[in-house]
Image 1 (cartoon, one colour):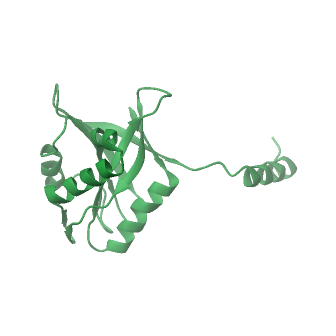
Image 2 (cartoon, rainbow, N blue to C red):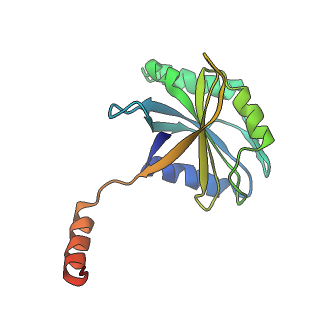
Amino acid sequence: MLDLVIPLKIWQEILYCTKLCDPNEVTGIGILRLKRVDKETLKVERLFLPEQKVSRGLSTFDETALHGIIVDLADEGKGDDIEWLRFRWHSHGRGDVYFSTIDEEDIDNWAGDWVINLVVNVYGEHVARLDMFEPLRIRQYPVRVIIDYPVNRRLMDRCKDEVDAKVRD
C-alpha cells in the first residue's frame, strides 16, 4: 500500500475549503513529492485552489485555471514543481466519500502519467487512490492517508508525567 502524508496545515486547508463551500463541492490540486525515507510514501507539499464553478454535485475548472497555476509556479522560479502537480482533491460536502462516475471520468481525463486523488467531506472522512496511465493503466491502487501532526514536546511531556503518575500495568 502507498502512503500519502498530508501535513496538518495542508489537511486543515483542505477541510476549511470543504466546509466553506458546503453544501457545494470544491476541487483543488497540489504538489506531491516522494519522501526520501522510502519509495512508497508521497507527501503533499503545497495546495492550489483553481478558479472553478461549483454546485452540490460537481466542481469544475478548465485548463485555463490550471495553466494559471503553472504560470504562477514558473514566475515564482519553481518551474521544477510543475511535474509534481499530481495531487487532486475534491469534496463531497456532507455526503459519503467515494469515487463517483463523474470522479472516474475526471480521473480518466487526467493529463499525466499518474495522479493521486483524494475525496473528503466536511466531517473529515476521506478516501484516496493512485491511478497510473503510463506505461500501464492501473486503476484504484489503494492509498493510506496519514495526517502529519507536528510533535508538541511540551504537551507530550505533560501527558507522559500524567500517565506515569496515574496508569499502572
